[in-house]
Image (cartoon, rainbow, N blue to C red; front, side, top):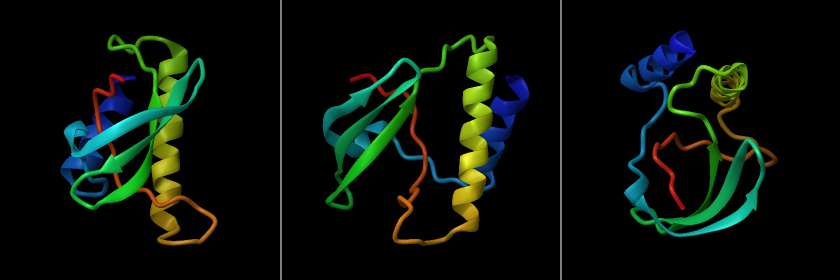
Length: 102
């Protein structure tokens, strides 16, 4: 888990992934909630866009195998998004945020 967390911090610091403060979003509504995460509809204030926010429920301690697998999958998904700059059938990835509490 620690290596995954460090990798996530590194890709943000190196500019591979943009970090967005959670207060950039408003009018947040739950679309779907599951045991591992949730999807929200929100307005991205600075851009006037309706966006989907996808969250993962990861414990702060992050010691569980499931948490590690979720972060590993997230990082793999980011790598795939980086390879496909734009495709009409793939949602655009704008970056990550932290502290979603709706």
